[in-house]
Length: 377
Image (cartoon, rainbow, N blue to C red; front, side, top):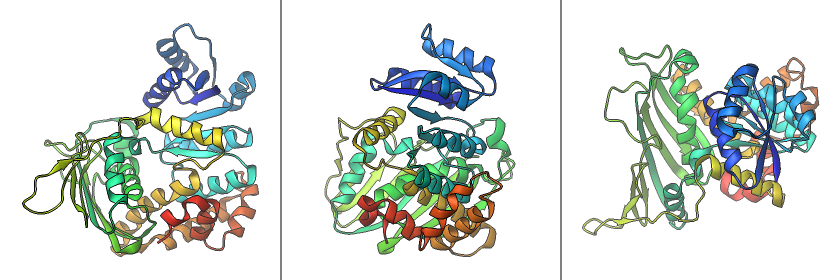
């Protein structure tokens, strides 16, 4: 039973408190938020009479509880600070996406995990979907993968920080779709060409729409087209997918089991979801705990997850420049930035790890030897 602290008492924090309380292998022992009154209210609402430590400081609550695990459900701009505090305290971390506001900060956290021997995993919970798992199995059993395309069109009115972000769709939502695509393809992203826009009627300050071509190793392209400023005809939150393989064409609307048509004129068949597949936050938590128990590398351990964040930064860079952007260039620029800020971020111990990577891509693969075949072009 892992004694677990949740950091952040907002909407995602409430969901994580509920998930931790319901999971058979975790015990909620603490809730951290700068608004201690809010945290107390969430604890009462979600945990009833169960006693947990409440405070504004992770270090304080960790010391009071002898916790094993931290779940970081704070806003993105707090992720680096929380993860650094947890890793230095010897706590394993399961953090909400993105790993950090920038790729440079995410690489710094990967380096810190190496230097501390700690575990930092990013919860890309949309991977944990029985229908998507069935699609991935079909793709993996194909000899040749062609193009993947995903459409994502919705019009949520969140209010708050998302509506003030410069690139809300790409940074806060499309990272899920890019990560799902990376999981399906099973290869490293190579380059991106993209364009962001904002419709005239948009209620977002920043770019709420984007189109991107993400090139992967082996000549596979993923085409993304989406908007968060739609007025109707919403797609699923999981996107609307089409995948071409030598075994047939796959269509998945994100909410119902996918179908595959092996050849024109044949009847489409349903890809049966895996009945044992864990779902959503609970699935993400279970995978994290299993990795801790076995000592294996969890899905979306920080060295793996940075490639999803690298796609996001490449989309932003390509949209700004109007040019095709290489993922390796984005990774190397992020390492340079992490080196330059190591001291100002209060993380001088990360320099040895950053310096020993021959290239960032090679360093990531060396840290993930079991995944090298799946993540190398």
